[in-house]
Length: 362
Image (cartoon, rainbow, N blue to C red; front, top):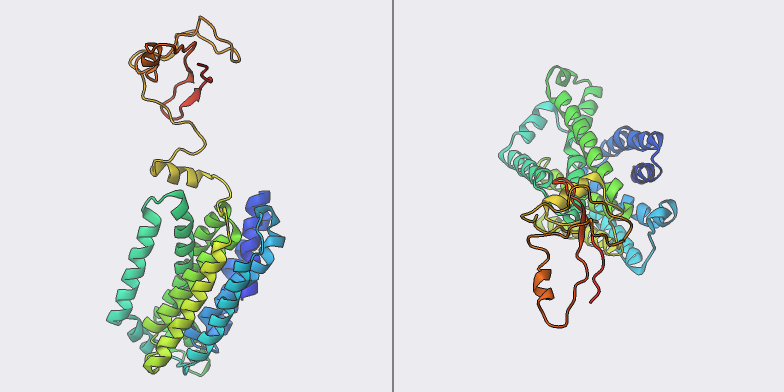
């Protein structure tokens, strides 16, 4: 499942680079349909708190292969990659050891009671609030990459839906088919599919704007934490474990997260380019991206009607900017300073202001 996740995400990133839609559809198909089916087969034989941390293998595979498969992103294998990969692998091993609990298969009635507990409802409300903040609040371009990765990871980290559905299938194969006349299995499938599709949408945006190692690391970190937390809170898979096992389990999860953060520190210049979405984020944050910040509009017309700019030539047909003319009037009044010409405004548009500024010579 981790290998398929790596392949699908790198195909999506590559499709954004070469602008080939069929490559994107192949990656999206693996990410939305094939990956969850393989994941479901794993959840059928082990607790969620054990299976979920192994999603970190996606980070390891991506960190080792991206410098070669996504070479256009100029990724490099560094010492931080090696140390981070080691911590991720060590944490995954210890989560399997300390998260080893008895896998209980719940009937549909038991599952409904589990999902409607106060603690489960509080978890759902907190997760919904987090997603609303991440998606609706206009963050800066730097924070936007983190928000996209965390949103995709949380949406696709709700593995309790798939875990619960697989449990219903197993009880049905044992002769108890009454669950299929209730809405629970269909709601679980709808939740799993919605999480996969919406998470894929946010992941695609992130991979189109940021480098693969950077985005996959943030995504998998959020995915692992959401899956482990829902396994402990919603499914209560470690409810009967001793306190020391519970503590060591979460220390192992934090070891994975720390290793992924270490890998992420090696992803220098994670931003690849300015897309439409990034431009909107920068604009709402008050940043000027790739343009010259314009002065306040003067009181008089900026350019005399009929004036033309002739390739850097100073012409008497061009009338200098009046009003607050960069306060050059003050400079001209100072002894020994001459300002031979003033910046000419090429065009003025409220939506897109372009200035053609000529150099000053004193």
